[in-house]
Image: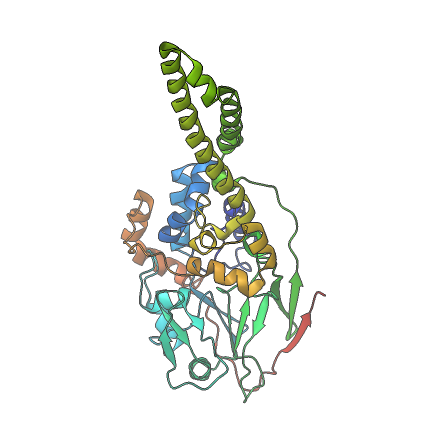
Length: 402
């Protein structure tokens, strides 16, 4: 359900694996687009740099062109509306989504933006006056209420909304149940364990079989270590080595003290003063190297909490206690607060993407592509018939890890 890239060191491997699954199981394996499957976010975060480090810009552009073609949502078993973010006030019926031209960068408003960026309200289970309100956490789109979810489900004769987009401590969250069906109106799934190597959360998947929904949790496993920002060892170690060299030079130059300088003759005294100035310069260099070394040590501790992999988030720069201690004492919600600014749409204005030659050719023949593929595959989303009221409700089983 989206967000295959960014905020980790193995996005390329992840998305290539997804593409291989799609090629091998094209009729049973479906990928939905998330808010990170776009040029704006992959440039702001780490995926573009990762592609340049491991491959080249041509590989990055090809992957971006593929992301442009990903479906935005899906209907599972005639009952479940699957989407990355949430619902939109502009969507009354499922058919409204069929009119979307999705072969471009998502904009900061509109149906496409809402499907990728919307969240349930913080007080989703409470009664509120407004069905939709501005999503201040994301800086775009909306937060939708319980009543808005019920209205959407009723109009489209669906049972529940299954979405991703928000980290969950247990890997999933069952939101308020529909009183008429007794089934959760919204289910949030999050399948990245120990998110950013700092959240210490579990992950979960949903398996639907024989009218039984099984939610299975799993924990993180160790992965290969990578230096922040995909640095090589030599570049990474320079501040550490430079700090030690500066310390040695300071120790050598400090063998000359002020009393010895006073006892020297004029010519020797001038040389000694020059030497003392050099000592002061080396001291400043040593302090700078220490600062760089401290920052790089901090970057290695915070994992993906750094958006770019090369800078500390402001929420950690302001802390008075050591970063390792801050992270160790922080709960799941505490880490979320530290990371909250990275959940929002990046502040620089979104621009329409500059299409590659391949995408330009595709855009020019889009009508033909749609006509040829419409008969054998729903490329916007896989739309099934609306469920009948006689269909039995699925049973939910939760496999909880202790």
